[in-house]
Length: 159
Image 1 (cartoon, rainbow, N blue to C red):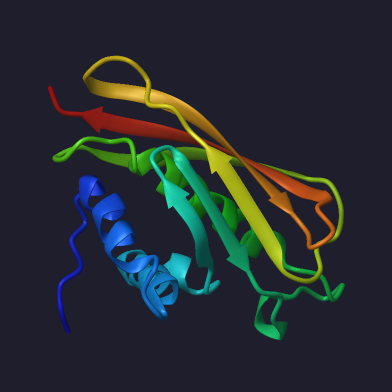
Image 2 (tube, rainbow, N blue to C red):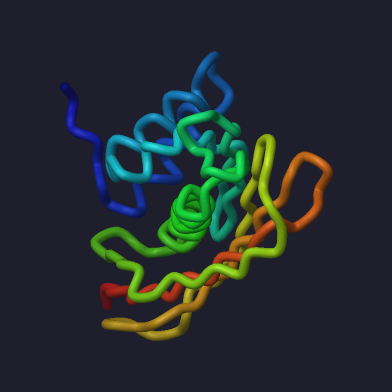
């Protein structure tokens, strides 16, 4: 199996190479899931991606539901984490890295159907270890906000 580059600077290059090709977005989405296998468990589809921006969809499937027949809270959190991660890491220069130090969710209503998370991020000033808080808004097919993810990222920005 080929190795998937994990350098954050490669994410946008990889996206640009694939996004307009047949099945390109699906291949990119699968690759993201392979880089972070637990993230891949929700089978999120990257719909749009650019510097500091990500939009990822998650189809409602029986395997992601809870006993109330709605999307499980942890599946929603996983969607928020991958979306904020893509948006944040797309800004980190080559050789940098990041990790979530805290992830908070505000659940607004039961989630059913396809859920889309959208996030815009900005890179904090400075080099070395810096912290950033990134927010992802999760919406259902009608556009109603079902949850808000707030990810606290510890970044290591090369000089």
